[in-house]
Image (cartoon, rainbow, N blue to C red; front, side, top):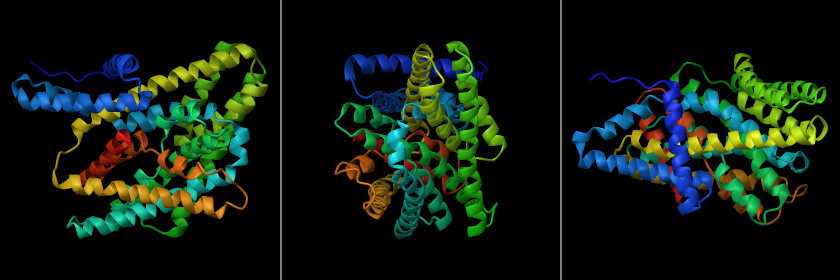
Length: 403
């Protein structure tokens, strides 16, 4: 019997079916935050499939599931599809008033913090690998530092909203996560080019690429958001206005890629503009209600599928026992890097901005790594250093699900 490759629609239908079924189980039984529950159940389903495959190899169930997951280009699915929607939807709900008040901290965390974390994790990885006899060149170690440094606190945002966390701190956590995604992707791209030898590293060239991608993305997002704002303000039709917001995300992300500027940064800025100026000045109450609920639904569906994929991804990880210890060592190293990358900006800016005593623990433990880190790891070219890097970021994510 010939094996047929599932179509993109078949893949999407299967993932949405699984997400709906597991989401129902989580809501009825586990009652965990959606992101945590989906990841945990996806991981447990992966382990069950692996166990069933080992116990009953004649069934061929595990290889079939592995072929299905292998057919999903995780990097393209997230980085060229889901990410633009997730960042725009997340930015819509960020209060610009609180975010603007703490813009210095957010900028420092999203730029200096990411660079510092990349350096600490990269150098630490390089040193530890050498001590364990796993020779990883420094450029590849820095690549791991870049992909594990961007935060993605989707799993904790709902908890922060229910807890007694000041709105200004909530806005800081959300603002950092929105912008350091784009910054991290830019740094990752530069370091991968250096590690593979396709580009020679120079400070001037790297600074130029970083400025073009990050600042260009912010400028493009501002223009896209402003154009959508003007169009929405000139009409009063919620159907058309929701379509305009959808066009900003889809066409805007595609155009940002064509212009070689950061699409993630552009979508974050466009979402902030529409979610604040657009909602306040360009929309009727009816349009606001429809637009916010539309993007909340998109955000919920995509996050459910994303974290389900993260849980199922354990099936595709190379199971090499000697890398388990190497992966476990990444946990305290990444935590230390996160602590230092938060501590340094807060100390430097403490004379001007005080986020309170909850700032350090919230920003450190709220800085979860999610789909972006996994997508970047799985996008690495095949080679001797890909498996250790993928293994280590997977060990880190499993640790975060546990806590």
